[in-house]
Length: 111
Image (tube, rainbow, N blue to C red; front, side, top):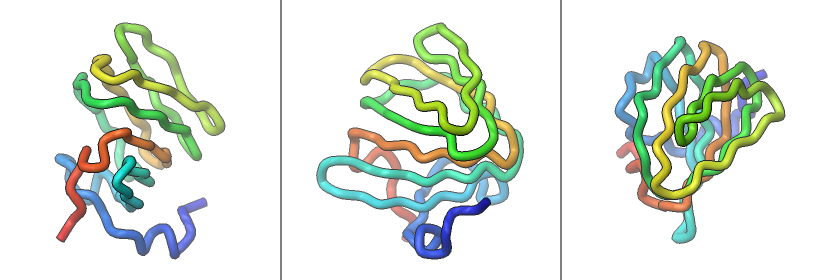
């Protein structure tokens, strides 16, 4: 099931991936960033690090490697990535996740 229209109407993020690969919607505050991601195609997210991140899988699956440990996450599974810990993922088409970033400016909002 797609996110409701009111969430899909939130501003998008300027992420370094094509629009035909991932759709985004975001709520931002001074305290952090809540992002709603829909992956339209299989995608490999290269290893990287940044501030703390928490997420949950709504639909689909992600093979997520956090600090060298790889696990498969499915609907209802949540993950927590401490600040500065390297992580990367293989994400299946059709996957939807909600990610919360401690950095309110982790990604810029699309103009």
